[in-house]
Amino acid sequence: MPSTVKEPDARTAVLHIGLDPRMGVWSALRTLADGQRVSGRYAAVACGVIADDTWPSLYRAELEATGEPRFFHRAPRLFGTAQALALVIQKPDLAGWVAQLRRVSGARRVVVHLHAGWRAGGFLPRSGLASPDTVVVSTFHGINPILARQPVRRHLHAWMATRLTRTAVHLTSVDHANLARYEALLGLSAARFRVIPNGLPDTSRRGCPSLAGRTPFTVGYVGSIIGDKGWRVAADAVERLLQRGVAVRLILAGSGPEDAEAHALAARYPGKIEHRGQVANAREAVMPELDLLTLMSCYEGFPMTVMEAMSLGIPVAATAVGDIPRQIEDGRSGFLLPRDPGALADVILSLSRDAQRLRTLGMHARGRFETRFMIDDVVRRYDALYAGRPDPHPDAVHGVDVSEAGTGRA
Image (tube, rainbow, N blue to C red; front, top):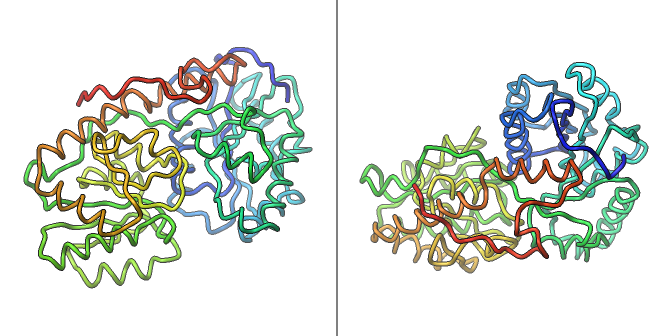
């Protein structure tokens, strides 16, 4: 798995592989693969998944719909850390996947692009990928800081990271903020990473329907229904406003261990609070209904849901964690708030009564998307990585964001 490779061309195929990819990671993987297919630069862009039988059927359908070669390895049904460790023994046949992709595509070179972060250290060593015509990338989509309080789990994850770095693999991170955590928790030097954000294709859809007077002011949460992500903060804020007679509604899109609580809340406020569960392509199916996206997380990298909202010109109210403060300009394209239902309720009430401010915030959010997160730019940046060239984007220099503010084009 050499680190020096030739420029991507029609003789090259890309194989994206996810380890139990869900929510934002699955969306990022699928979107990048789709963008690379549309670019026409590769002989084929295929996807492989390593997951147990709880991997959602919705994702399986999306995988099959690509029309490209696809691969699946059934992992043992275990807790995340245990599952990753089990793959040290029950390795997926990556070499076989690569060989099959070469046969069906006619490609001479294959880029194996893992979306497994350091956990790839459980199965990548001795995977049979050592070849002059194979390059391997592992993208890190974030890390849970709770590992700092769990020394045994932290040691096991650091061990996987050490195994990974013994291979000739390129490391990328989708955000800058987690680099310090990778160093502190896993022992991985920040200097080893290239930061390439996730991206999205453009869309003609737009949010903020209350500006046209079609609906009450609508707040949205899109993500896992789990406390750390802050869905309850959004629900508490909206519930407070409903009890005061404010015309507002809430849409929760996603699933997780707290689904029953979310369903019960929706049952108490029919027509005002909805829990839609897992939704395919939430950007197109849910977000056009939103005037404000909320993400009151305890920790993040830079979430796909924030980027999706920006692409539709929807402002975001979020906690100042991860790379969120780097991309959301407080009071200009969104809001950086404490993890407090009262503070969020104040923002919702203010925007619901000030259409011009909502319109201006949405314009700046859309402009930020246009200058930072178009998928074509992300595809070019990965092209450069695969080819062993420097990152063409200026924010790669010392991890400093030097891009201009949003254009505000609608």
